[in-house]
Image 1 (cartoon, rainbow, N blue to C red):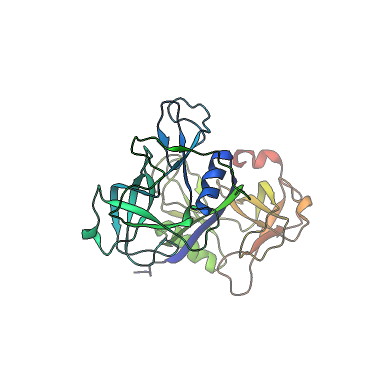
Image 2: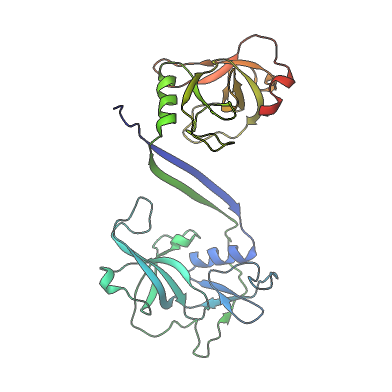
Amino acid sequence: MPDILSAPLVVEFPFTRSLGPVQSAFLTGLRQRTLLGVRTADGKVLVPPVEYDPVTAEEIRDLVEVAPTGTVTTWAWNPDPRRGQPLDAPFAWVLVRLDGADTALLHVLDAPGPDAVRTGMRVRVRWAQDRTGAITDIACFEPYDGEPGTSAPHDGTSAPHDGTFADPVTGIVTPARLDYTYSPGRAQSAYLEALEGRRVVGERCPSCRKVYVPPRGACPTCGVATAERVAVGPRGTVTTFCVVNIKAKNLDIEVPYVYAHIALDGADLALHARIGGIPYDQVRMGLRVEPVWSEGSRHPDHYRPTGEPDADYDTYKELV
């Protein structure tokens, strides 16, 4: 029985966004240990604030200050914190309705164990020592037995706030990352093993007879299983492409460079790969290319021009 292939895989994307006046005031307020919500037309206070009324879709900017104390509305225990989570020790994910607010804020609760957490328990904000204008300025919530904070009057109203702060936060970078172990199935394992031998194999659909590379184990058109292996390429045709102008983190490739869809000879599905060996502004649809293997590599490093005449559009138009 062949070995089961597996490898760690990380999908990471730092999402950069600008902030409108409401989100800017909310995050800047956190830096100043001030919690802001926004009041809707029907008088509800939303925390965290949004810029449009979820009921009427009207723009809302009526900022109000709420208290750093609140009530847990629901929770879930996390016994094994992962890298990058707010606390290193086990903690509870909680939804907290802050005093003066009508909606709940998702954050974490520092508690000794799940027996110490319950719906309806009172909590308060524990502020981070160093605050930068981010949701992490709230280090966590902690159990609290005192009175509601001063920003939550007993009549249920919240104090108006003009949202003005010195040096407001106008943009944020949100890191999105997914770590997991990938195990390819039968079809992709055969494909990867062939690449290690500097060969390219696909699989043919028994119904429509199309050859798919990389193989998926089933025909995406007919929905039937595929098993017949077919050698394709190694040469192919650029069907479409894009010029990359932003350098990727931890990728030692100078920009600009070209990433293209390549229809390998004998395949009915284009795969994607980098084009090298030619100035980026000379890459074109119909360019004939071949793989370039680095020493000791298990897959092609890039594709380069073969020197052949460009392919006629009619030969690859169905793969664009």
